[in-house]
Image (cartoon, rainbow, N blue to C red):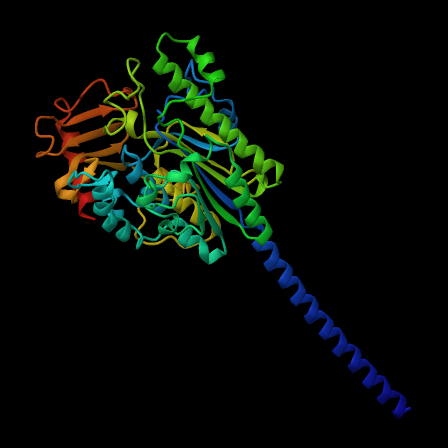
Length: 445
């Protein structure tokens, strides 16, 4: 009996050992599967950037002429802020803010060109003067840099002012930035959208082949000049106005809308929609001059809302609840923090923005700031044109006392006067004083 009991004990011990071993292997397998699942669930991120378009120029914003059906549908599927802002009404500094999450005073790109001496060789002096700006900007931490810790690939298509795409931390990109080959504000990248999405499609396929999540920068040169829309769209809008310039601009807005639709369809066809975060913004505003191809002076490069206001949208199907928010103030400085929040990446301390998914923080924030510098800039002190503070219901525009010495401080109730027609500065000196103090504190950070 003792022998049988001993044998039984040995058998039982072996069973327990095998059982424990099997359990350990099962747990390891589960952990591997969990890790793999987490990796595959990391959402792709797509930034969609309109270029030179007013905050009013969309179907969903009530425009009676411009048709934007694909963006209108996108809005229905997104958390949309109709009172979004970019901090500056010019493309290069605005793009730098979108990719870094910093205000222009902090990322150092104040305008489109560094002050330079005009010489006989077109573009050479300009490129040489801008080199230090690119070198300094390369030291900034961009969203693609931050996403690398999560294994993301990053792709640049479209407009990109800041030299080669690698300066922004992108792994691959369309913009070479070589001034000897015409590199300026996007070069080859400016073909995306206007000439189809083939390169963008190839980038997405590359990420799928490598089984990596990706960040995609889609910044087509639309509806930016040249206003040369397809004939079918131009003919459509010619019937709505006697101004060929308005007709061309309106047609460009719908052309941009069509390319957004192509982008959405591409992701849908590849089965990527449900695992992709789409973020939409416009780099700066535009008000078309009906008499010529340029813009009206209260829009691009101006401190008014027609220059800096834009709808901002966030869509992640099944993860972000769609809502049309017509009251909350948000800014392009919030785009990077929102992505980091979604991905569980700690936000760098120097970022002034916040995650728009943090409802408490968003409700507690009272306002945002804006800055306008010279197109050809030097230092902050030598290039400042305007400071703005948007603290609803009020917005203040403070002209620089040196470069805009003939202009007065302007205060608007933008809740009641969204097109800034009535200057309230003289009748509300206490509000002017308070907002000026806020600007001083902002400048001192």
